[in-house]
Length: 267
Image (tube, rainbow, N blue to C red):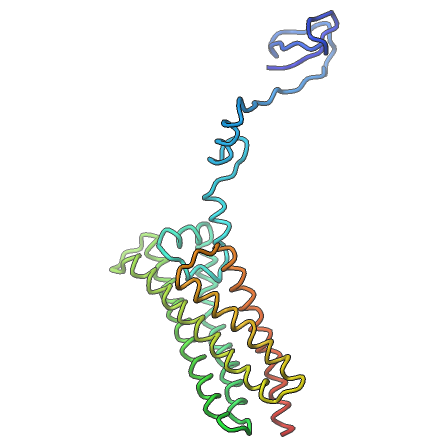
């Protein structure tokens, strides 16, 4: 249907009349002024219904919001079910498999960083430094091994979800993947928190660097504890907290190594 202007008088105060597009209008030269009449919601209830179901007007659905919340690579292995995992990896399986294979090299790299920091801690002169450094190294080693296990379970679950033949049960793989991820984050954040004592012990301006280690580690441990306990916290906030903790600890480790090495050489 098209709304066109008429020259002759009409009953509408605006001089408009709804006519059929297919009917010729010889008295009005082309291109004539016309516009398509868009469909309108007949009632407030109709509008709300379309918004809630992702209909014509809203194009929004609760499923799409959930999918946007779970797109972070950091939370893929923390999926609580096979269905949640499928939602997270939808449309990016190939990229995820490539990232997981690259991650094995990343695991070896960050384990070397943790080992270096633990050795620098063990060489400190205060009492118990060697034991604290050894414990931090052990925690980092367990976290790295859990990271390897997490990647293996994730890759196997990706293959099984693609209907690849095998004896693995997807639900069992999803549970093992999540447990490995929880162990990984818990032990890595605990190791970083323990390494912060290296700087707190020296006092002075080193306390700032110690806080840079301790605060993200504490945030990470709190986030993993909330996720592991299945507290009623929005997944979007859990994802953001985990990302902040992860990036904060990466910065702390990279900054801390040269400072700790310089302090050891001056001792």
